[in-house]
Every structure is written in structure tokens, then in C-alpha cells.
Image (cartoon, one colour):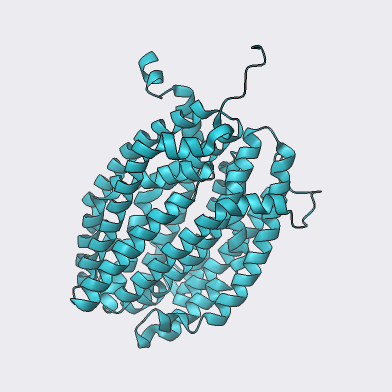
Length: 475
């Protein structure tokens, strides 16, 4: 046990990490389960329906990524304030997050609903499915204000160490989404359960029904997380002024700014990446959409650990405990590798089975299985930059991840995919090869930084904020 502590491992820190990580992991699992169910339900309508839903998926990633980038600034600020024992400052920051959420949500709603008919054209979607893809995207854009609340307020709660409330809300909205899907996608039909047949009502709205179900669930989730924030005992903004606070907003956006740029730049890269894949045809688009959905489940350990890393790193900085910060970084680094090794092995083994859950098209299944097994090998490597980035977010250091992600996305994934698919006319396998190259480059860059630059570049940059306060007993 003593040897484990010397290496940075102790049971108390381990238990805190998992206490913060498991609700986020379970929440991500539920969100992914709903994505699986949505994809399977829409997939039963045919390859064209799957392609219509997937055609604008990366634009939604861009929106979610931008909102997530904003939330990182408040996560770091609030976690550090609470680590320093300054609850009132944390509550003031929560009030400012409400102001930012309202502004961002209203602006994005107006922008995206106005552009909904153009986005499928910009994404090079097949002309036959553009109208359906546009209607799907429009419906999902209407509740962007509650979607912003879910992203930003969820991370505000996690900054306070409350990962269970977002989990409970996620359970509710996911069950709501599944139930609404069942009634809105399919027409009225006969259903047999335990040898008894009864008439099941349905709206028969197809792809648009799936979008309406998601929009209602997003709205319910945004309302629920807002209520939870205002009732929270630590960081409720009730009674706090919502006027802009330059000090808090400046500090939050100094952290969030590079992260927002990173999310926008990488998500824009995903949009360009998807548009090049859409140009490969319906089978490639459907296989890519389904494979992306399948793969997302196997990143769950990474995102759970990233949340724990960001929160605990922020607390350590706020408490001026440099030793705790370094102990956390080493422990969570090795935990992440172990979890993602298991995840990658499972994805490789069950790739074909999972593809068959979402499509009956043999060409789609074969192509999707191939690219999933390719990317499964890189899963353990990609988990490393995810968790290191989480630690850096909690410390308020977001410029280095911005540079690394820009190099990986635009220098490897986009440039490589353009070369192989547009110039050399290769297909989806080559595009996913470029994606894997992007992941491996991030692993190399973040690992080298972690091993050689952590103590100097990050430790020295934190400087006095991470030094332990002087012992009052000593002269």
C-alpha cells in the first residue's frame, strides 16, 4: 500500500475519481443507448432515412461542441472557487452562466433555423434526401435554448461535484425520447405481445417523428436541469444579480475561449469530413453514420474520466494543492488506459453484431464492420488525450489542446481525407484511416507533453496558484 502511494495511487483518491466518473459514464451510456435506438428505428425505414438523419449530424456536433466549450470556462472557474472554499463566488459564476446560456441559446436558435434549408446543400447531401434532411435539422434546431441549458448547466453542476443530478435527468429524458419515438415514427399498427394482439396508435411521421421526439426530450431536459441548478444547495444563482460581471466572465472566457475555438475548429472539421463522405454516396453515408453511433458507446470511459479529471484538477488548483494535482494526473492516466483497452477489444469483437442491429443492408454492414474494427485498435490510444485534456481544462490551461487538436484535425484528418477521397478517389476505409491517423497523432502529442512538459510548462505556468500555502506554525 505504501509503495502504491509513492507512485501516486491511493484508495481515497481512487474512490473520489470513480464517485465522480461513474454517473457521467452511466449518463453517456444512456445517451448513447438512445442514439442506438434512434438509429435502429430510423434505420428500419431504409438507407435513405438513415442518410437523411446522418447528413447534418456533424453540424449538431458543431453546435454541441461550441456550447460544451463555453461550459468548460464555468466548470474550471466554479471548481476552483469551491476548491478555495469561496461558495459565494461560485454562486455568482453560476448566475453568469445563466446569462451566457440565454444569449447563446437565443442566438443559435435564430441562426440555425434560418440556415436549415441551406445546410444539407453545403454538406453535399444527395439531392433526393436534402428536403428531408433539412426538415430534420430544422426541428432539432428549434429547442437550441434548452439544449444550451443542458450543456452548460450540466457542467456547472458537475463542477460542484454533482454528477448524479445530470444522470437522473438524462434517465428521464432518454425514456421520454424512446417512448415518443415509438409513437411518432411508426404508423398505427397491430402489435403482438405474449400471443395477444392489440392495436398500437402511431403518427407515422418517420424521420420527422424522430426529430420531434428528440426536440421534446431536449426541451424537457433543459427545463429539468435549469430547475435543478436553481434548487442546488451549493451553487444556486437565486438572489444573485444576473447583470454581466466582467471579472467572472473575463476569467471564464479566458479558459473557455481557446476551448470554444478548439471545439468550433474541430467540429467544423467534422462537418467538412462528413461532407466529403456524403459525396461518396448513400451506402458510405449510412455506414459512416451507423459506425459513428456504434463507436460513440466505446468512448464512454474516456468522457467519464475526463469529467472527474477536470473537476478534481480544478479543486486542487483552488485549494493550492500541487501534490494532489500531480497525484491525480498520474492515477487517472493509468486508469484511462486500462478502461479503454477493454473498450477497444469489445468494439473489435462485436463490430459486425452491432452493425446488424441498425441495418439490414449487406453492403452497409460489411463496410461499417471494416471501419469499426480499424478504429477499435486506436481506442486505447485516443483515451489518453481525452483524460489529459480534462486535467488541463480543470487547471484552466486550454491553449495547448487547441493547438494540438487543430494540427490533428486539419493537418491529418481533413487534408488526408481530401487527398485520398477527392484526389485519389478512394472510399470510406481511406477516410477512416485518416481519422485514425488524427487520433494517433493526438496520442503522441499529448503523451509527449504529459511526460516532458507537465512539470515545466504546466506546473510552472500554474506557479503560485498551485503552491501550498505557508504553514502558519512555522516562522
